[in-house]
Image (cartoon, rainbow, N blue to C red):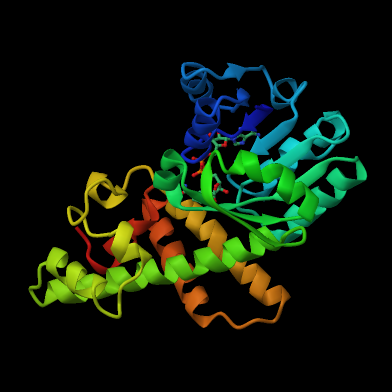
Length: 295
Ligand code: NAD
């Protein structure tokens, strides 16, 4: 069992850290939110005054932060973790951030003798709680092999996508597709409902037909159609519109850099941006349904 420091105990990080505690690791946690830290301490984790203090003596540091600027703030600079950690420490960043940011943190980590991988996740809060997340890793093969047993305590499918930043590229592509699928699923359900169809019946029909997809199968956006999903609890928890908008922005920036054409992703980005601008940024992303079916 390893001595692990976990920083960032939000919707995803809290259940991930909890699974590491359950697996028997010695986990020290830090978050800017005292209540998030307290919840993990009540489950058996230790706490510290700062990220740096939490990382003292750790064999492995894992971060699960909102965006690139938070990751840079935690790792870089004189007060950053990379300057404090002893050589050889395994550093895993599971936040979804720009591949360029992941590469620059990785380069600095490598220069300091640390073993870094970017390891963003897919599977949502449900997957984080159940320990069935997909980890998509970028970095050296030897670091991936070191990280794998720890990631397996939080996830089911652990992929090595390629060099530094590759995990983030794959994650951005996945989330762009997810946004397109969620907006499209919402549009189709709203059209059916306008024709008088029961959204539950229509969902079942499309699930068994060629329109079936992840949004329909496990994350239905229509309130009351599926139990246990954000749509059935006023779109609370889950994956926030603000975070999806961030990921679509990452996809857009990446497409510009690589001169790639992403017409569907750009439209999805605009739809989610519009939805966020209407005051829905803190709701789960399946609330995009409200653009098509105002309550
Ligand atoms: P969240 O906003 O719920 O949690 C982020 C946590 O980080 C908060 O508790 C915040 O207090 C903490 N934090 C911020 N800055 C910090 C700092 N400097 N030091 C310590 N703690 C700090 O976000 P989330 O939903 O848990 O998502 C985290 C990451 O995972 C994001 O990059 C997101 O895009 C990605 N992601 C989320 C989901 C999902 O379904 N929610 C799914 C896959 C990937």
